[in-house]
Image 1 (cartoon, rainbow, N blue to C red):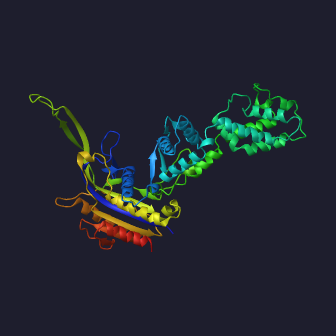
Image 2: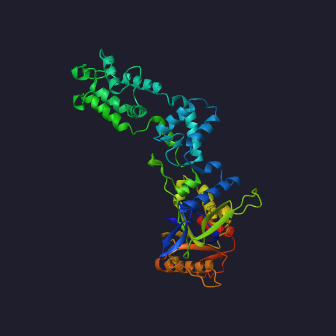
Length: 469
């Protein structure tokens, strides 16, 4: 049985530019045939995540229960390893080798893309790198271990040393100066058992070193058709294994389990180089759209140099800023069971995270151009529904026909009337078991829609209590 927690909000912002596009203009979208103001879901989620950070200061969350989105993983690892006394010229080499073993590529000191990692995951990476410090980034030692394993895997006879030399040549492990690449070392380490199986099969005590085997003279480059069968098999193993993971890489990847980070559990993540560590979001957040049509407006501003001579006329800086004013419909839904699953069955943390999310959805604001506009306008109509045995319902189509408030009418109240009308129509048509509570500051008639409450705290208390029934 699925349990969906949905939140709907109507929020009328004064003139503002909360979320800009690449030209600096407020984002917008066509909906229902008219231009609407828009705030992206990414912007809204960022605001909520910043609300979570505030909750750590209030000791609602522990620091380890949140995550960071960053390209600067190397710098964070260096800082935390330095706290453990791991400093010196080899720190960068060790970290790069460790991340490389996980298939993570670097551009300078940054990862190729933004990574969303739980702070406990980062701490666990630091612990493992510190523990395995002497094993990381030391190709000669690793090659030596491979040679020892190969030597022990060859049946001992008068040709054992010759056979070993031939195998080492095939694997690019012969000679004093190694020409083997890191990815090839990883491939051999990850597939050593398979290589030893080939050795056992083709180099048993009964097989002499014949002309076919002896054809692998050092420095002699031959076509695949000229190689012995065992050579081709070993090279195929290495070739297929270049995308593999070493023992160190597997150990490091094992600590990437989401870290019970509330924001990762809610919003999910995608790690391009390690898709097996992706996490599907328990929460979906819609782009906020205005309930009415909007037109862009322009603020022409000038600035004067305070220290210029009094007899000098004219502005010293001028420009324009685009803005709008809009009543936004905002919507999000949380899959309660998925949230618990993402947090490794920790129901207490899931409840704490959900309450903080719902609170943040209401009180957290985008920060775009707020120093210029100070549009701090909380929602005036908020509804939370707990729905079981049904599908989520985004009520944006209540505003498919753009709202047009008459003179002396409240745009927010008229939007709330249409929202309630749409919710009732959908419930009558499709049914669905659920309960709704509404914080109604606009005085709209909510009869048949849900139970009215008088404060945000009461709204959250009722919702969380219902989930625990």
